[in-house]
Length: 172
Image 1 (cartoon, rainbow, N blue to C red):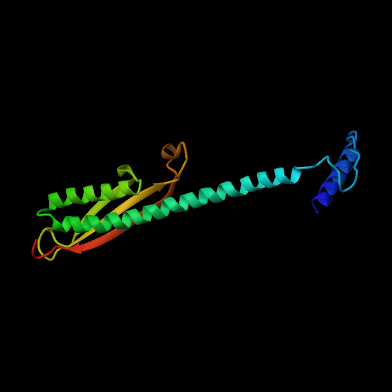
Image 2 (cartoon, one colour):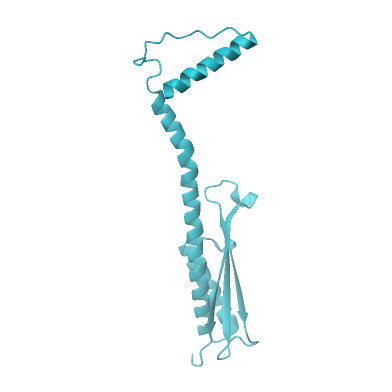
């Protein structure tokens, strides 16, 4: 099949050269199917095509892995930050403890603090009062992996966010 395509391509090229008035290329003498002139070309073509196809597929898989890891990170960070916040005695200590929990969890998943944002919202004016619902939202920007100028160009793979709500307990 490959031999037929090559021969057809050579015939078309010869017709174009003849129509343009260019000299015909020297024809190689073919010894038939056992010809050694193109020996190994199928291996070269296979390697080149597999590289051209595999590089984007591998990059896609790595990018999806980064997004999935970021997804796990924001869900875990939001949940733990909300739990830590409601265990503290006052709102200021709760905010600091929640930020530390988020930074620790994001670092475990390989994300930096510059990529994340933390928001804390309460259903009451006093977040530390018993029965108050505290909602913690963590936002994370996942950059495209392995790009040398990704930060300068602001190329992001995904913007993720997760929220968790905890009720401040009566007894702490």
